[in-house]
Image 1 (cartoon, helix red, strand yellow):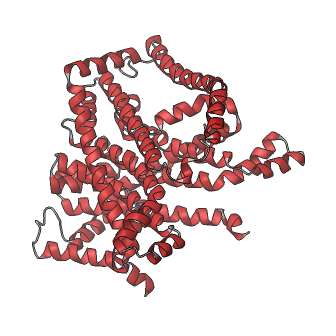
Image 2 (image 1 turned 90 degrees about the vertical axis):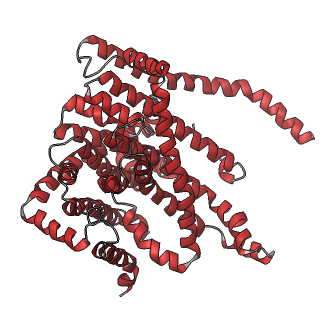
Image 3 (image 1 turned 135 degrees about the vertical axis):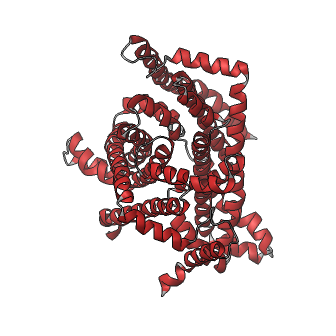
Length: 277
Length: 248
């Protein structure tokens, strides 16, 4: 009781000090973003660039607003998000499964190890025409391409994570009579979770990148497809609107992933480490 | 023998490919036999097409990557060394880092046209941030004791940067460059697939459009192999460059 009392007291005391420390930093951060946007607007209006080369930021915002009002934006956004997340979900399930199998069974390791070590550093996007040849130009081929690219970081992270699990943890779980299944679900995978999450944090943006490239190449609906259509009609405001939309989506996904990490790993020592501002 | 067993699964996959195509389990249009693919690869080498397009691609990747490494490393070290630079630049890095760089393909075309310039700009922009972040993390993580002792021995700020901060930033920096190397291949191929008049991506696209799928497979596999080989070569080089770290 006494301990809690002291900590609340301390928190109340330090709160204004904390705000005073963080506020200028926050302002400085907003400042550089605002400066960039202002510079864009001024450069575009100054006449150094033609509106085709650099449409003003306000025109781009207006275009996004209109797309949103007309509903196109939401359809494209939802489709891109669906493809990227579907691919990501497959990568999570299959990648963790393959990674686990590789660290549990010698046969799986023998089979997958050379495939992963050769496949990981390859520019797999080069296989895009092959995937189109096999699966057509619809959702299936876009999702497949994203899976091919984004699954390798998940597999690698799972293998490394499971390898790094402390022996003592496994021994004591076995000693207390845990079955192999319980061992995997309650000890090995949670202990490997920080590494696996790192792999997922690489895989999610990768899935988005590849989805966008696939959409750009195959056309149709989706943020990438809409951008290419705008580009074909020499509508550079549409192209820049696409970039802003994709940037916002990427930022939101990356932030969401780090939030999920913090939630899932709240029990882990890494959550207590002082955050570097 | 050991490497043979290690890479046996790949050989098995290749054999399965050949068998599936030869036994007509899949359409030979969708999957031409591996031996045919090798045949058209030799053909492509012989008439010089692969070499001309390949050199064009590698030139773009090399220039873009070199620019990204120089500018990115400078930026990263600056951000770690001067606090104002960090405060101003880190929000921008944070916003642009998750941006799928492939979204910039149409813009670079609007700015610099269909030729080398747009690809080089794209690769430069796409590869710069991983290098910056590597250099930043590395330079920030240089041991305080080393910095102190250099300072107490009277090293100037610039000298400290060169002799202490840069060497200790090396491992992270080199790791960032490795990410950038992989990215450069991805961006190169995807930009060339979408708009180009020469290069690997262009060759893949035009062969596919002509329906000569065995040649298309040959180029795809060549690009994949080059990406893999570049990564392995880079790893070997960095291991040598960092030998001083592991010896002690």
